[in-house]
Length: 360
Image (tube, rainbow, N blue to C red):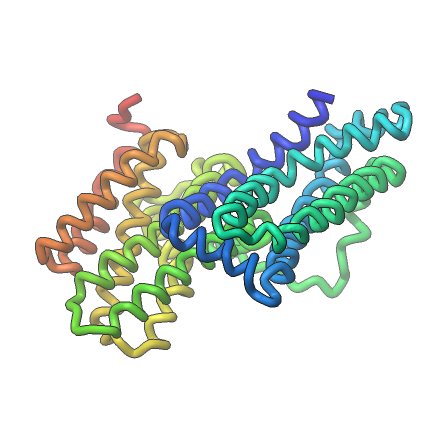
């Protein structure tokens, strides 16, 4: 039982660490307790609130089911088919424990909604949550049971190849973006959603009064900073997946140029939101875009110094954002900050990429 939990549930949270990191950053970094309480109250009081909540929870459950079914197809997980030797009651109980591991975020949020219902005297509206649990938990158990009764011990790769397959471009940038969308699609979606929300809130607030560029500079810097999960995944792609990339005869400047281009493309979608609200000029948008690019370049370059250890970068990220906020508040030109950040990234990239002058 312990082996099943560690090899399945722990692997789920391990492989989706980037997604949960960004999600936690949005929920507990951007939203305050007042907003959390407002969301819970909305689900409890709105006519269709519980329906919206069930749709969100069902999408998460489908995501967990997709992961489970694909994980247990891998050769390393053939041992799970031995669970058919358990009797039905023991098997369903243990699969239920695995399911509870997957649905931990939903269980915690259900407890939070119960506390909100107690405070607001809305206990008569909380009962659908228990119905949702009674639907989602058996659904995951049934899917796990279906997988062990329908084992797929190998995958015939030839059957997935079509003679009409479109040739893939010979481009490192294309491969990187394709890998992000195919392998880290959920992380990409969460990062872009969080960044877009901060963008929209900042621009809406900016047009309510006569503020200067410092307000959008701070707000959009935070929005761009939410993309560090994608920057980390790009580092993993280059350093873990595409190992032969480092042995290619490429100059350090060309490698840095690739890094600039891929990050510029990553933060482009939310930048286009600025053109929707017509509160910033083209020059101001360009300055803020360069500022966001410099932030991600500094973070990505720092990963080479720490050999990709994400936990060692969180404190510098927080300190850096505080320093950046102070620089903006003291009216240091945004363009000067952005250009200085890009230049400094290029300077230290030449040392840290090759492993020189690293501090453990």
